[in-house]
Image (cartoon, rainbow, N blue to C red; front, side):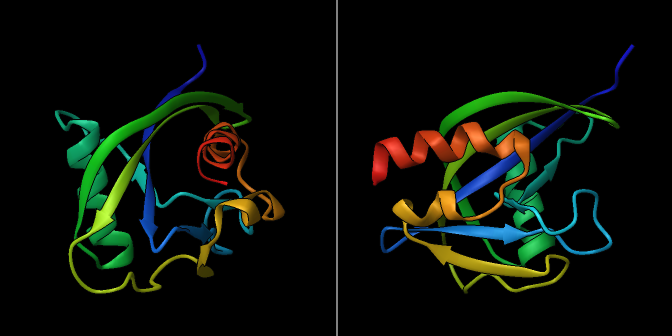
Length: 131
């Protein structure tokens, strides 16, 4: 049976720009862009997981808001079930820790980045809704 990995992604919006994070060389899928987030731990809600991951990965505090979408993509290492949520920063700017780069991108520019396959459906929704 293929392993299912439940993860979350943050659609951080600021001044009509969305935060994109490029996966670092030590991560799986290096070089691909993604919505920052991570694995949902045992007993954790997706929203709590996302708030925790943003603190760990980007050293920032954010309010998790409306659910955008949940998608599945099968990779060679398993099926990623990605739930993305709109989020709002509560304090300082996100800090680069494990990603290669982070960048604020206008909605109409989102599709110019090479996104991880699991993130692409959310990107398409955002382009439709915000561009």
